[in-house]
Image (cartoon, rainbow, N blue to C red; front, side):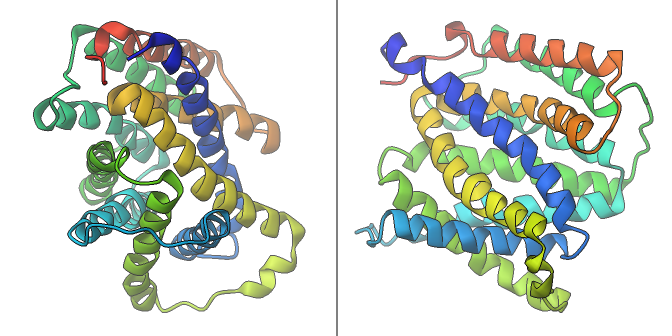
Length: 297
């Protein structure tokens, strides 16, 4: 692959991650009035209709690929978010953040065994280790407390594994379908597979809360930007960089959340947190080295 043709994909992946890191702040505002499952479903619905407006047509598909889209909707949307949000109610936020941050490692392992052109290299391993240490520093931010909770921690791991599976499936279809139509399909099945959980939860939507401009803006940000646009930009990065390098940017999410929490929620940043940021950046740079990936033509 032409090196110059890949350069723009790195800042695109970084911008996507910055937005995803900020969605945690928007979600925090929403969760005072809606359940995590309700927030997740509403953002998928908004994303679907935004994508429909962007590309108001339906694609001609190979029908056996419907199962693939269903699996993508499950792994990249409903299971990922449900497992993560449920884990947050059972185990500590620190545990969830650390375990979910293992998704780039899990992605690399799956890609190594189930793809032909993305194999784990020494630089990949070194970068992952350094970035993961940085994530731990940022997550704990000077407070080193880790309490094991088997059920909650397993759910967090399921969330990380779910995203890794989504990434592997995405790699196989990202070049076969129009980007907007592909993500619209993913969002559709994300919505469909969320409905059974909504019925089980059985809690009414407090739509009156959306008269608060802060909540409405937060929801639109989550749906339009966080779920609609960012899934598209993520795909563009995957097309150019592959899933191992692109997923390494996930390590930046805790750092972005830490900075925004300090700005918007007056949370304190420690020297440990800053050191963690340095480790994350270093790890991502090492992982993103061209030596880590076999060129994808």
